Each structure stands twice: as structure tokens, then as C-alpha cells.
Amino acid sequence: MNFDDTLEDVGSFGTFQLVLIVLLASPRIVLPCHFLLNNFIAAVPPHRCDISQLDHGALWRNLSEAQRVAVSVPLNDDGEPQGCRMFATPQFQMLENISDADKLPTTACQHGWTYLNHSSSFSLATEWDLVCDWKHLPKMTSTIFFIGVMMGAVVFGVLSDNYGRKRCLLASYIIGMTFGFCSAFAKSYVMFAALRFLSGVGLTGISITAFTLNMEWVDAAHRSLVCVISSLMWSLGNMLLGASAYLVQDWRALVMTVTSPLILATLTWWWLPESSRWLLANGRVEEAEFYLDKCAAMNKRGKLSTKLKLQVKPSKVQKYTYLHLVKTPKLRRLTLIMGLVWYGVAVTYYGISLNIVGFGVNIYLTHFIFAAIEVPAKLLIYVLINKIGRRKCLAGTLILTGSCIAINIILPKDLWHLRSAVAIIGKGLSEASFTTVFLYTTELFPTVLRQNGLGFTGFTSRVGVSVAPLILLMEEAWLLLPQVVLGVGAVVFGLVAMLLPETLGARLPETIDDVEKRGSPAPTKPSGVLLGATMEHVEDHKE
Image 1 (tube, rainbow, N blue to C red):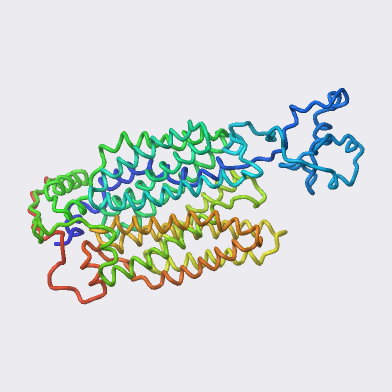
Image 2 (image 1 turned 180 degrees about the vertical axis):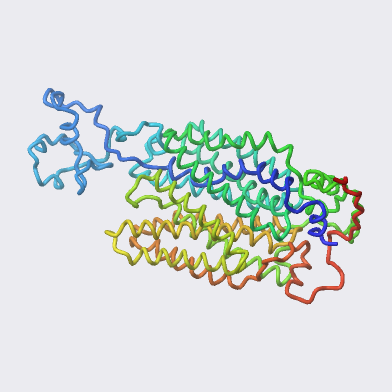
């Protein structure tokens, strides 16, 4: 008997599974809030050199503030004060609108900067004057954070497959919450960057473990539904981030605001079940029976008395590592292709998400719109993945995302309404590809290596996330180069996804043998490490 058969007996989608989804909702909401937090805390508001400490005699003191700025700070081509230069000496003749101001000697700001219409606590840039020569440092914290996420994916991938999903979730909650709150009290940029790195390590455990725990408690018929519901929590968190950033325009308070749901997640962790699928795969039969009975009771299937016997001896139950992902030919090919596809999905999604300026509206509204468009995109993908399959959906959404980017390269800038609409559609498609690849990955890797597989693909995706800000910096060489790279990459990785096997309606593989035999004639005996069990049902209470 396969585990899915047992799960069907105790209830493959009922109250038990719905409660699990609710318990994992608050940590899922936290993820986009931290992953895209730099859109707001790294913002650089308009600024100019601070002239409040200057004093050039009686004439200077008789000038208004606007006149002092006029004689002290040169103007940009748009007529606004330059942000990084000031005149070497006050140019009082500028009060007469002298036109050759670009020939006057200038120097770097001598007394810091004044941030127009923003307090010093608005962002990292205003807190530590990270502008001009230091303007890249605020955005660099995003790369540092995702390097932590990348390291965490490797660590938690191994730990979750060896020590269980539930324990790793608690560790992720505590690490993410502790260093998240600590980063809000950082006294220097270096301290903040280090704490963001550690926050990333902890939060990635939530990203890969919570999703897997949900998937391992439902049958094939409901996996896509649970995947989309879990993914909608990301979209909800993403919209809440835009709203929170608009209401809380203080970066320290914003960091604490988006971290606070982890307090609720930690308090409710005690009610989470361990994955019975994972417990059985590791020979822990009695614990698996406990959670299966609990599932049956909550789903009103009546008390179950189970006698589960592993078809392998306890001595054969082994610990798995990342090396097992490349030891057999089909699993090795699968791992390589999924690693490439995850990189492509991530670099495309974050390349679009981290570029929220230039659409004619403020960054808060742009971010909210980009988040809101994910909802209909995910509802559409829920229908499609059950109609045309996972592989075509993943490849199609990536190729269409690349097409949207290409269209915006061609469209003239004065059609900004149309360009914005195409960009929003492309953002929705890129999120649809992310939703699909999460579900697809859990269905492709076997139970004994599922978290290792998600850990590896999480690593490659975070490489893509770390590279995305660097791709956006290519605009300094050629304005359209980032869009060309992202668009071509999305199409190429979409074609690569077509090399994967389809999993629509298939059972979750339990062992490496299940993956190697995928597509082969069915064996006469069930493979592996899970159940060869007989289930003795006690009669349900008659109504």
C-alpha cells in the first residue's frame, strides 16, 4: 500500500489539512515582506548638500533659504538642485540668473546632506548618509540578505530531511524573528548588513519547509489547490508590505512591523504536525501512526488502528545528503535541469520586482499593483496546471514573461500607460511561474530527498536573486541591456523546462528508485521505503 492510499483512508483534504494551511499562513506572509523589503528601506529620497552650517557674512544671513540654496548648489538639467555637488564658494551672482553656472568651480558636499521632505530615519540612506559615492550600499544589503537565504537553503535542506520538517520550522522561526528584530536596532551599516544576512539564513527555512509540509499531507488531486492557497499568502504579504511601508515611513519600525507575525507563528508551532510521510520514510512508525490517527479524528473518519510495517529493515533506513541527488542518472538529470529552471524563474521575478520605479506612480502604489496582479495570475494558473499540466505551464509562463519584456523594449516611452500594463502582465506571469515551479519541484523529488532537492534549487534560485540587482546595474552601460538579458533568459529557461517529465495526476515519489523508474512499466511490487501496511478500521460511529 502506498502512503497516498493510507492518506486517503484518514482524509487527504479535510479539516486537518485546512488547519495546517492556516497555521503556516503567518510565516508565509512574512517571507515577501523581508524578501522585498529593500524596495523601501533602501530607497534614496531627493537630497542636496547641507548648507545650514555655512555662514558667509551679513549678505548671506539676509538671504532666504531658497536664495541660499541658489547661490550654494548647482542645478541639474531638470532644474532641481544637484544631490552630490556644491559651489566651492557662494555664487551670489546666481541671484541674477547667470546662465554659465556649469563653468563655476564645485566641490563635494562638505557638511552632509539635506533630504527633501523626509526624516533622517526614513531609510538606510538617510540614516547613515549612504548617497553619492556610497549610493550602492543600501541596495547591496539586498544581495547580502539573499546570500544568507542561499546559505540557509543549503543548511535547512539537509536538516529538514534528516531531523524533520517541524523541528526545522521552529529553528527558522526563532532565527528569523531574533535577527529580524535585532536588525531594527542596528547602530551601523555593517551591523545591519550582518544581521540581515543571518535573518536570511533563518527565513529560508520557512520558505522551503512550510511548503513541503503542506504538500506531504495532501493527495495528488489537491496538491495544486494547496500550492495556490499557500502561494496566495505570499501575495497577501506582498500587498501588506506596500501598505505597511506607506503607513510606517521609518525603516526601523517597518522592519519590526514585518517581522512581528513570526511571534504568532512561534506560539502556534506546538500545534503543527510532523510529516507522517517523512516519519515513515525514516522508520519512525509509531510517531507516524500518532499523526495519522490525529488526521483521521479531525477529518471525522473515525479512530484508526494501524499496523504499519516498513518493507525495509531498520538498518537500511539511511541518512540522505546532497550527493544522493547526483548518484543516479535520472535524478542527476532532474537536479541539473531544476537548478537551471529555478535560477531562471528567480532572476526573472526579482529582476522585475526590484525595478518598481519609472511607471508614472509612486513606489508604494507600484509595489501594491505588482503584488495585486499576482492574485488573478495564480487563480488562472490553478486552472491551467490541472488542464494542461505542470511542464507546459512552467515553460509557457516563462516564455510569455520574456515576451512581455521584449514588447516593452520595443514600445516607445511616451506610451507609458501601455508599457505599465505590459509590465504588470509580465509581473503576474513571472509570479505564476514561481507558483508552478514550487509545486512541480515537490512532485519531482522523492520524499527521502525532497528537502535536499528544495535546498539545492533554493540555492540556485538565490543565486538568481543575488544576480538580479547586478543585472539592473547594466543600464549604466546600455539602458536597455537589463531588459534584453532578462527577456532572453526567461525564454531560454522556459525552453529548458520542457525537458522535464510531466507530473499531473501522479503520486508523489517516495524513494530514489521511484524517480529512476518514472516512465518505466509499473513494477509488480511497490518500491521502497514506505508502506506495506494493512489497515484495520474500527467501524465508524453510525449516524
